[in-house]
Image (cartoon, rainbow, N blue to C red; front, top):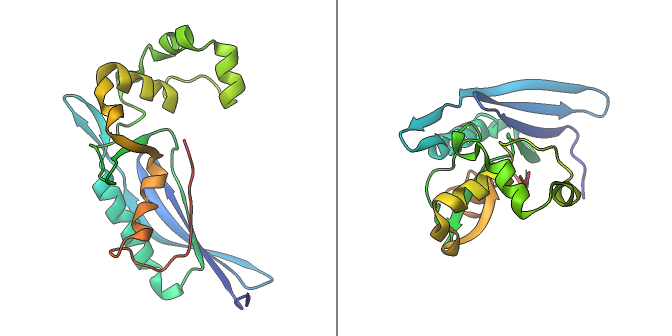
Length: 184
């Protein structure tokens, strides 16, 4: 593989309130960083919960990719909060808006999960600290409220993974070769 004279990598950071993309260039001696795009990320507060506006987030990711297109990054990495998830049908269709980790539905779920899986065993499996915003407690709350949902989905993908899906579709910008998938 031929190494480019200047290596260009694009990083997208999608936080709870805003997102941005940074283009990093390395010429063999020096790293140069340049912000290429910044956008707002607002949760949608509905009567039934707090959700991410995934359609807007996808559009902002596309905008960030377009803003860097002329610089031709060799790869793209996306970093998100990593706690939330999207459910997809067997046909690849998004099954509703993804809840935000700030949604109160997981309140009290830690105790209920520990009734099913002992705390020590859960820690041995996951190795993460116990916070009610963690994905396992969100999934448990989801199952309690909508138990039939899980018979229809194909896979659970973190919000970070959802931004990866368009890479395999014809509407993708096609300027990147890989996206760093962060599992919840």
